[in-house]
Amino acid sequence: MAVLIVDDHPVVLEGTVKKLAEVHDIEVAGTALTGKECLKKVRQLELSLIILDLNLPDISGMNLIEQILEIKPDLKIIIFTGYELEEYIKPCLDRGASGFILKTSSFDEMITALHVVGGGGIYLDSSLSRSFYNVINGNHHPGRKKRNGANILTAREADILKLIAKGMRNQEIAAALHMSERTVQFHITNMFAKLGVRSRIEALIRSKALGLLTDKLG
Image 1 (cartoon, helix red, strand yellow):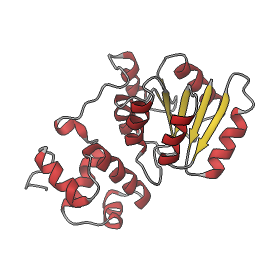
Image 2 (cartoon, rainbow, N blue to C red; image 1 turned 30 degrees about the horizontal axis):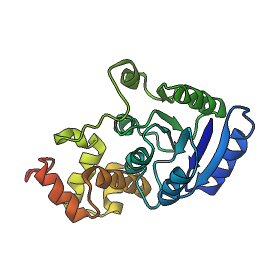
Image 3 (cartoon, one colour; image 1 turned 135 degrees about the horizontal axis):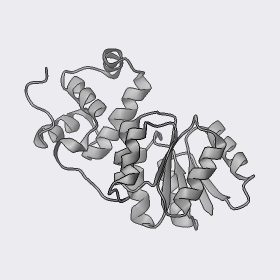
Image 4 (cartoon, rainbow, N blue to C red; image 1 turned 90 degrees about the vertical axis):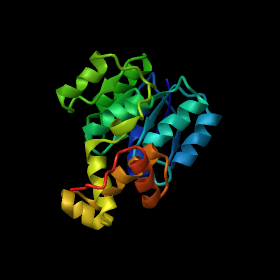
């Protein structure tokens, strides 16, 4: 199984490569620190699977899923993130990912995820809420996209959007929602990717057009 590892943290990247090198049926075919580098490697290498960090410096991991599959539709993608954000599971799977594991998980769990996804299955980190396993047991199909109406944003993204509409900066949003500025930026980056915009103004205009924002922001 030829694997590409994509992560903007060199220490995490090097540690993952070192561990996977110990597994006889897994070959680390390449690594990438950015989304742009990832797409270049996808075009150049013969790959079976990608381990993908959601929070990259240049391209939203969620948006990158679709770009990867546009190049090679049969590639398997496992999301590998330090964010324990269950609300991102279904959007990632809907865009074509086949697995979701946390960086706090054991190496054994990563290997299990690789084998399950490599064999055509879907894998969710064992530490995630059991309620999310209905994604696997229900009628989910990787690659199916749902982008209409209110379903386009998660509840947390919708909360942040409302605060952006009130003119609040990231630091103020972080304080209001009791989270770090990095997590706020993570949500905003993914929200922009979903809406297909590059700025807050564009996000507000697009959101109003989709009916995601009203004049009564509460």
